[in-house]
Amino acid sequence: MTEEERISLEQQLNELLTRSEWTAADAPLIEQLLHTLQTVSAENKRLRTALLKVNAQQPKMSSRLRDALYE
Image 1 (cartoon, rainbow, N blue to C red):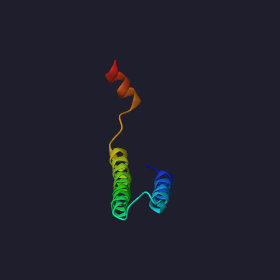
Image 2 (cartoon, rainbow, N blue to C red; image 1 turned 90 degrees about the vertical axis):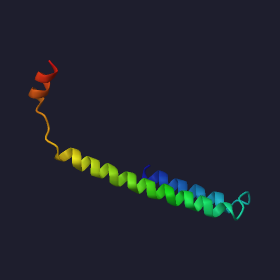
Image 3 (cartoon, one colour; image 1 turned 45 degrees about the vertical axis):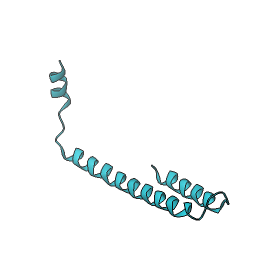
Image 4 (cartoon, one colour; image 1 turned 90 degrees about the horizontal axis):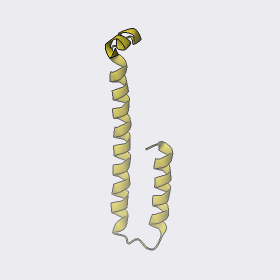
């Protein structure tokens, strides 16, 4: 989830909370879901960054060797 998507969801949440269709009991649940979404999104970003770092440290196979292995 990109930052723009997260901001869009937050704006939609704020619009939903201002509507009279929601009860007062629904607001904490929605807020908790949004917080969970933010937490998971941040963790996903950290994991992607860590994975990229690990993959960048591994030695790369030369193209000649790779071609020879595939023949």
